[in-house]
Amino acid sequence: RHGHNETDQPSFTQPIMYKAINNQTPAMERYIDQLVKEGTFKTEEINDMKKRVWDILEENYAKSKDYKSKPKEWMTSSWHGFKSPAELASEVLSSHPTGAAVETLKHIGDKISSTPPGFKIHSNLARIMKARAKTIETGSNIDWATAEGLAFGTLLSEGKHVRLAGQDVERGTFSHRHAVLHDQETDKHH
Image (tube, rainbow, N blue to C red; front, side):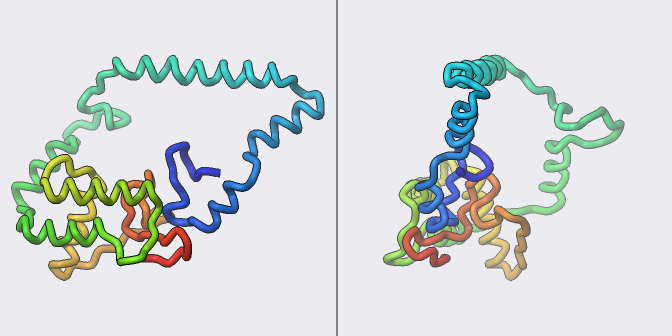
C-alpha cells in the first residue's frame, strides 16, 4: 500500500495510481475481517498478537539506543590488510583532489531545489525542496541527497556522464533523492 517501508511516499512518483490505492481498504484490514468472519480468530486475539509484536519491536528499539558499533563491524569477518572505508577515503582524497567553486554549487543547488512555474509537486516534497534550498544557501546541514545532487551536477557540468540504474533511481531507495519530480495532477515529469 505504501511502498516498501512505512515512511515511503510513493505518491511522489506515482500520484494518480496512489490516489486510487488510497481509496482501497488496506489488505491487513481485509484479511483480519476474513479471519474473524471465518471464525479462525477473534478480534481480541488479533489485537493481542498485534500488541505482542509491537511490544517486541518497541523493546528492541529502546535497546538499540545504547548500542555502540566497532570500526571493523561493517565487515562480516576480519580480513588481514583490508582497509576500512575511512582509510580508503583518505587515500582517494589525497590522490584525487575534488571540489567545486561555491558559485557553481549554488547554481546547481538552485536547479535541484526548484520546479517549473505551475508544476504541482507533493506538499511533503515541496517542504523537502524548500529545506534543500535553504541548506544550499546557508552552506550548512546539507544532507546526503543534496550532496549527491550537487556531486552529480558538478560532474555533469564538467561534461562527465552520470548514469544510475535501478528501480528507485528517480526518488532514491529511501525516498531521498528526488531527481525526477512528478506533477501530482498530471503525472508530468520534471
